[in-house]
Length: 212
Length: 201
Image (cartoon, rainbow over all chains, first blue to last red):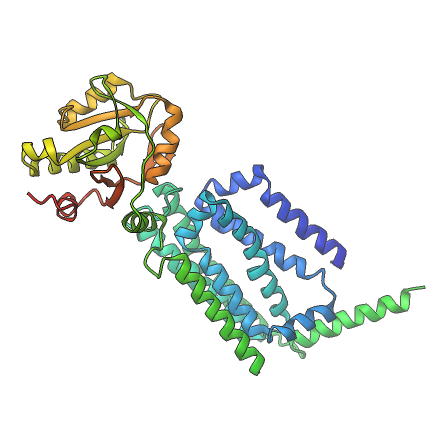
């Protein structure tokens, strides 16, 4: 994806999510709110990072201390929005809604996009397993809670959301394990990091050559 | 490496601050707990609203000044949780001597279904649950436009359940002698509510 196109897609997706028709539809149910709207908001940040030139991305990475603090920030910010209280606030309090629409792209999606090419098998494994465990624990709490945890959502909706989260956690773990075995069967000579750098550098050179 | 460590520490510290702030010091993870904590810390004044009871008499919350009031929110077609609400109020009423009900604690069930719950519907619910209309009144907000601000002041959120009914954060609310909301308790522990309110029989 070209940088300009990435910025466009990110902005379009973000706007679509923020405008009433889609926003109301997604926030109307707990599972759509948590499992569709929030991941898509994070995705806008992830895509927007593609709009940055490789050198600038490297600079931001260096300034922020590499991939570890970035992954940490993404995980902690994501877990905050899994709190039932944060979910309720995002619906009842405009300030919290604005915070959600800004922090999910900026503190979850963007840091992950910056860190991802630098992460090896262990780092990516940490991200996937951590995400799965967060989903499983929160989902299970939602299913097992004897009371409604969100004032804005029905008890049945909470149960459904919890079940979806548990199954999503299972699917993520399964996908990750399959990926591990497939990856082990066909080992790559280069690390993800160097591949990314080489390919983007190669692309830049290619452009330079073709430029009149 | 040093930068990575420093940045990670900053991230963790920032997260600790945000989580502590967002959960009132790791106590309130749901908005319902937060609502109860807030009311305990800062008693809330309530808006002046005209209510209409099961006998068609109009009154206001301020008419109860000098007496505490236990308030619950109901709708008369409710099958599930409002039964427990009615039950809890009955237990509270039975636990207190009549003269104390006269002077110290009144019971008030307020319907949030202004459209369906007219006076006859309130009267039917009242007689089914043993509300006498004197110590225990069943009422609705007479002007539906005043319902929203009232629910908001109490922090009660009502949502349609898609089957023609509603779900809401049911609780027992205590108004003090000055008409301020001072406590919110679970509906299944009326004895504890009485003890906490200093109304132990």
